[in-house]
Image 1: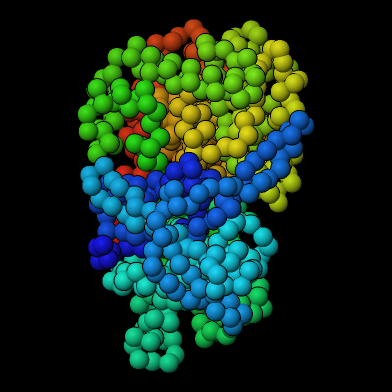
Image 2 (image 1 turned 135 degrees about the vertical axis):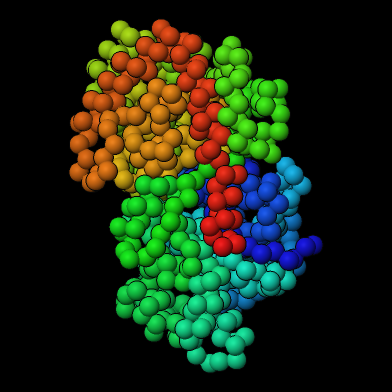
Length: 564
């Protein structure tokens, strides 16, 4: 085993395979795609996460559309191999033993990235401590903090146990891993032969650390009362450093990562701006997210790209040559994957959907700011568009966090509105949104819809997956779409861009703009000008697919963060 890795990538969730429930959504899928592209580029990188023996949750919807959650069941040994590595962390003064399971991500060019999933379910641990690596984002604040101790402190110690001791950079994918900075500080002053943390040690740790913040949503920034922190970790001299710990009575994981990183970035240009306002006066750059092309391109389009753009997996930029693919072959490939999607929907939901109708897809975490119900604001208007301009059918999917009652009510509302739309419009809400369903949906629909409340969408990546499969987006100008939208070329914008967008954005205006765009552009083009629609599909690949990928993204991290 080559242990001379230079970069350690820490993420609370990492999505690598559909059978491994080690992710909840966008953050974990991005982490997995990041690691896959690192392997493609043969980067000297190792990754760390938690095992999540019980996963995030298995979503079930009852007859009323109400979500319930069940633990995920999976056979760890079918995917991961155990390591002999052992480490110990301290929680409330007791020793908690940690081991790691390994998954090797193999790149298209032969690169290999080991991913270590931390596990405390060991016989030598107390029952509660054994559960620390069970549930992703489960439990209360105390459970979450102890998990972050496991990820940050335990993660560094496991890397040392695995002889990864020459690491030069530690990349924190969100603030969950922020406590790794404390472990690095402890290592620094021990190595320097001092008993106190000085500016020298702080600068040494800053030079090693990179931090990516992913959301402007306050709930996405973990905060823990210092009373809890001291109870779990005991006293630590870093707690007295006010330039490290922002507030006297609260540990804010985002500020901890900000204070001890030499490079910080948001995940889209607009998100970088929003983050600089949120966290002034910190210097925050931006690197726009991407997706791993070879993972998310559907089978029919992989065959098409292999025929016309050989080498596209090694060089995602070459997808710009998609403009040379004959229109009839692009449409034929799309028809194949759309047929697969519609068959799946009809089989799972008894929906009676039609292969030939304009199919709109919306799938993401069911959070209120994502406004999944914006399309359904005026049912009569939607029926009128479908009846007079061209028939529409709609597919929804997405999970609400178990504690998000508003998100659950949103799912139920959409689920029940399907009855109000029939027989004029067929609509379904598919349960248990995961990598497999996400791939089928983003590739199989005709138009990808996204309606967030600006500026809450930091980036978003589902529309990028759609673009790789020649599916144009119809989206509010927020996140990545501000950069990716060329009107009537790669898709359509809903409403105007608001540079000073505030929480009280006019919902009614967005609804009106959405219906106008459907009525005047999207539906007529699909049914009345198919050549123009297919031209837009090829531009989605050539302009957006070739750029909004993790190969380009990782190249930017290398230049800006890892080796700068």
